[in-house]
Image 1 (cartoon, rainbow, N blue to C red):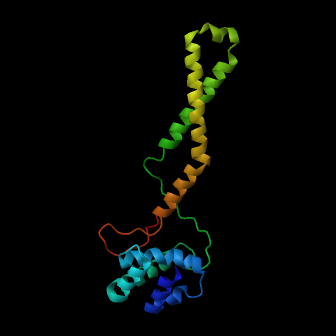
Image 2 (cartoon, rainbow, N blue to C red):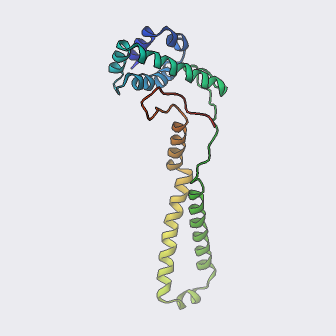
Image 3 (spheres, helix red, strand yellow):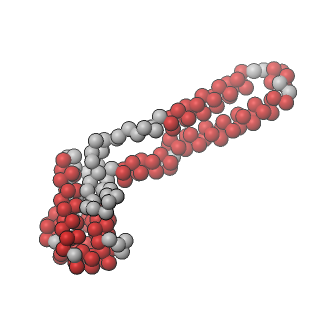
Length: 187
C-alpha cells in the first residue's frame, strides 16, 4: 500500500517533508484516507491519478495535511506521521449520555433486589406463593440475563466499540457539502 503514498510524496514535496522520516505504518494510516477522500475514489491508485491530474485537489490535500499538523500541534500532539504519543482529546458529553447508565442501574437494582427477596424468604414462604413462584424465578432469570448484558456492555466489546466510534468522530470528518476535509473541532 506504500506506492500511493510514495506517489503523493513525489507530487507534493511539502507533504513528503512532513512525513519523510516518520513511522511508515502511521503515515499510511493518516495519508491513505486523505488521499482517497481528496482523490474522490476508494482505490488509492485511482485517487493518486486524480490528484496528479487536478492541481486543485492536490492543493486541497496539502491544506488538509497542513491543517491536521496544525491541529495536532495545537493539542500538544506530535506532528502527523511522527511516532504516536497518546493524547486524549476532550470528551464531549452527548445529550443521550444518561440513558445507558440509567437503564443499567435499573437492571442492576432489579436483579439484586429480586435476588435478595428470594434468598431472604424461607422455603415455606416461597412455596405459599404457589403459581407466582414460577413467575418470580422466571423474572430472576430474565434479570440475570440482562445483568450479564449490562456487564458485557460496560466491560466488554460493546464499550470498546463505543470508545472507537467516539475516537473516529474526533478525527477528520469529510464535509457534507463535498468541500475540503478539515480536522474535527476540539471542544
